[in-house]
Image 1: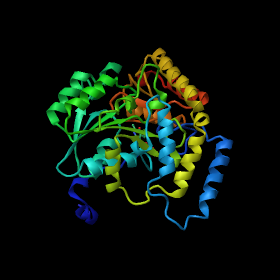
Image 2: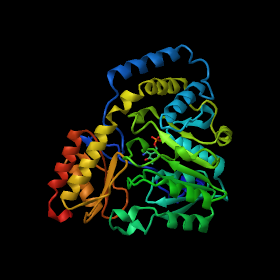
Image 3: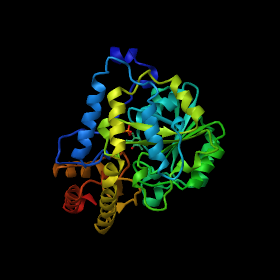
Image 4: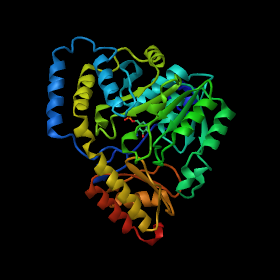
Length: 373
Ligand code: PMP
């Protein structure tokens, strides 16, 4: 054991950090970012917004990010569910928002349950807060491989696992990363009702990409003070570099998060830039339909190639039918296409990008050769 390992918290020893490769490749389709650059008109507004804060940087920012809360509440209210500013919390990416939730409602002696395969940061953030992670399963154990249905989380299975573990925090992820599958609202309400002492977090990072018929859990917030819906501007808003994630929940739950956040955690420029981008919400979300089109094209084309793509409500596609994920991952990288090996045997995940990027990916797959399938 190294000297640093000896100093490190016992529960962190031997753990590996989150590590999606950041490689300089022609086609980076591995972290579900938007491939579309911020349009010049929005860039101008961002620059003006930063300039307006610059002279006041001698002062701390508004600790309660009041104006930004209002803007985020107004954006969420476009869903048809009215969301008030006091129901909104924000952080440096939804990862930080999830951290705040675990700091406040998890901790030593408490458990958080998630249904894997799901977002890999859920267990990592859980562990950093000393919360015990309970590795639930989706439907049947999807890690053994199998078709798309293998990744569904059935209501019965979810309720049974929640009852068995009686967790303090439950993670639902809809649309789910890495499978792209969404939950119906009856699963969310059933899990909520089966976990009487849990804060139930529905991670909706990809909500804007959902197919018609998939409904956000925002509509369930009223009357459920333990329910939380997390969102991010990293995906549909094409704002991953801006680091702005947020949640909607009961005002009292939101208020409790003030106990754990660092004072002034959102800088004045960060708040101003996010507000500038939200003023251009329609422009920023204008590429969502094009991305969904490429996502559906990926599913259709990979099926035609004899692979096993999972129908997706997100901006990425998980596809199976590969002999060996690692070998195919490397072969695609050799062709300049970086996708994600999410640790599910025989599967890889690809982000839906521009039509050109999608073509490059699909061509690379088509030319892999028979020993990959
Ligand atoms: N939730 C899910 C399901 C995600 O896939 C991601 C990013 N990959 C996040 C949350 C975190 O995103 P961010 O911190 O950029 O908001």
